[in-house]
Length: 307
Image (cartoon, rainbow, N blue to C red; front, side, top):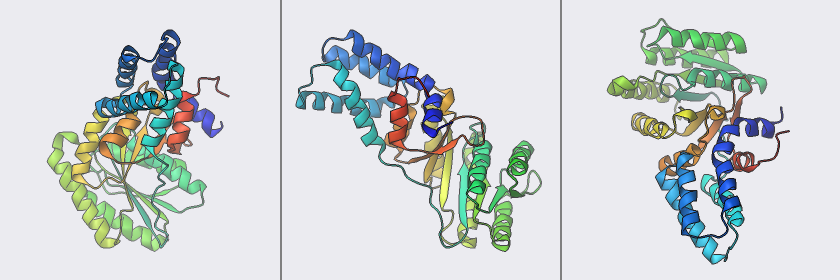
């Protein structure tokens, strides 16, 4: 399936829940007035854009509508898309170490699709003829190691693991050493996400980072926080916690196809100022895409039939 069609399909629920309501509002409203903006504000909040994003966009819409002397509510729809694109900014690609091994540290709470994301990343890199190694540093759960093993076998990518309950930092140390010996291009490290032991989680992540930077100066090259789009505003709270524990450089937003509240992407950008770098659009190995604000909004606002 073409990339745009797949993205559009994954945004069906968000498009129906957000753009569909905007279209309906425009159809039944005859003028741009305060009541119109209040209705639009409610729709935006229901789409999980959050108070900060909604307040900013509504304020900008009011200003531009007055400045451009807009009269038809339908004109607001195109203006809204333009302002949302400006807010999201241009695409931010994954950092790559052109001088040798690239290390991606992947963090996030259990259940957000972290291991699946790692598997999809490995699949994409292998497809680009890169040598990839996985590190099972979520040693707290035996199931996490087993899940990563499944992706290792599925993608044909080698994996470094220890027994459940082992020191995660020791796994990372061994993985970096193995990557150096084997001429690996990309090392992807899975980590635990135990929110109920917040202090332990933070210390574990700090220790892992210290080991990585000691063994490979300048690494990790990305700290990718995986968030589940279906959790809405709770994803913001998770991101704030992980920002305390480690320097998050990018967001991977999973399960975009499972939510009617795709506006969370704008909330993440506005409240956290961390770029969304990858988005999950389905269950397949191919369903992990580099995020483009323009493509996202074109797919979101396109109410024509999917190809």
